[in-house]
Image 1 (cartoon, rainbow over the protein chains, first blue to last red):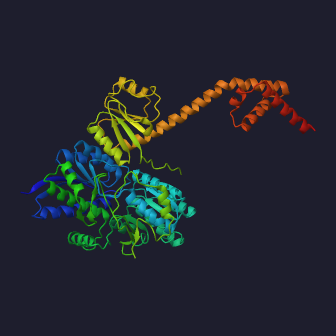
Image 2: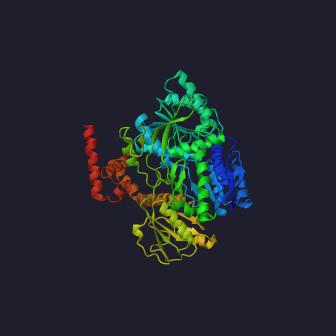
Length: 392
Length: 206
């Protein structure tokens, strides 16, 4: 008998970060189709899909509705940290489980959340370890005016401080603010070694475009000289940057479309079959897909959608996913991930620059971070970082 | 741009003075995630406090005399675990000199920030207390400064400012506060100061 399980899918597919929300939702829906159409799997998901439209007030109401009216015990959703923090109290009140799929700024470890996105030690630290030996230690920091930007930049400041570097400027824009010319003017004056970009959505796209325009008049503004680096620029956003504004700039993620592992190639075939061959796959899509597939596997194995029983299975074994074999750390509720560094190509995709051969377990509170070791690491010549191996 | 170091509790030891229950299980798990060793004592604080960095105690059930130090003078930060908000309990935990509190039931969120605030508040309070003690001490000794200044004004026929300046540089040379220096001045020491001043004045005049 097929077990019908209600689940909530809570992603903003309109609004300033709609690109990421749509990716994660499409990934989850692809997984949902596979599960519901597979006669062998004794589980069928009944989804409640809500679109908060990037309006923060909607998250609480919509998640409450999923849990109270539709009896969902599992919600896959939220992109930004403010929306996640809005939903967590509701999830805790109903003792449900939130499956969170995006990179975030850490300093959280909720018993009722499973984290598939990267913590700072899986994104910003590997990124800076790659960056500093190659480009220098004078950064100019940008962010959208909320917790992601603030905390990413604070950690970034600390990393630069640890190795004797400096932050030449730090500026924040409101969501949807696309007035970026003053940032270009300040960068032109300060001449940093790199730009650490934690703007999200439309503000970020406007900045890449303005940077490329500035590069037409001043060769300082080129990725070879001063790259824009990001911890959340994904494939689906590249068309929003225009034809060439992104080329050569750098991002980090646990998955990129050009990853040539067998599990990635297999997943891309599935995406092509459902969404067409022109669609590039992003880490958000992969984690959205993986979360629903892993949830189904855990429910099948435990015989129940009960949160504690699902968690028990989750921490007991590993799961096949487009990211490779995926394991969760019972100590933190976070996935172990391979950080990857990549640059934007002319084909509006990413070329992988470096891939961590080992999975790194999340350290959301940076308990294991040692500034002295970090400084030693980045002061090595660029070809010998301990965490990352350059792909030849 | 100021950078606060990432607060890191790795290697810390926290004593929990509370009956073992679900709340304490959740709290311990979260503390262990932060790299902290947890020791639970109840109903008596048995473990050595000197080895710990913080005490988290049951604000609902603890009572006078449970801590081995005078009320309000803890040698390490105290955090009260509260479910009761009765004014009598709030008054009692406040008298213990708590640096922060946590509400029961314990949730995953709020623990990291509570530890961070408790430590910062404790350090700040200690610094302020040291600063108040030092200022009180100086105020108590202020009459010695006045007396010494008047003495020098009289003996050397100086204005107040010049006499004070002699005392201040003499105190600085001995790396003392002017108050401590003046408190120890006896007749002989004043005479030596006068003598040194006269000599300098004659040299300059000559």
